[in-house]
Length: 71
Picture 1 (cartoon, rainbow, N blue to C red):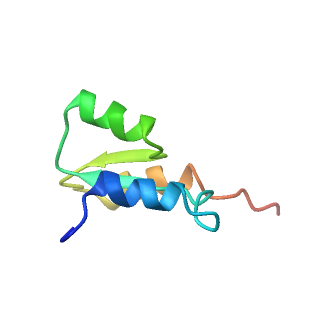
Picture 2: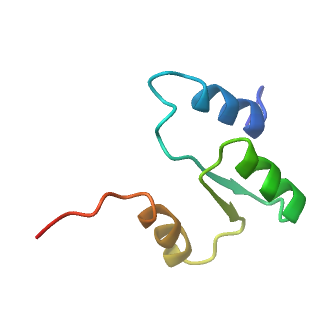
């Protein structure tokens, strides 16, 4: 992202009163376990490593944060 790092943006989202409860999934080419753990400790709710090769990868991560709809 031009002008701001993902970590800075995550911090801004998680510390904004209206946005703090919105789940944030990081999509990054950085696959280092240390980076993934760091971002989750910083407030990321999920982490996907690029390239995302199937739509099911993205779907499976998003569905974790979707409310269950009763039939």
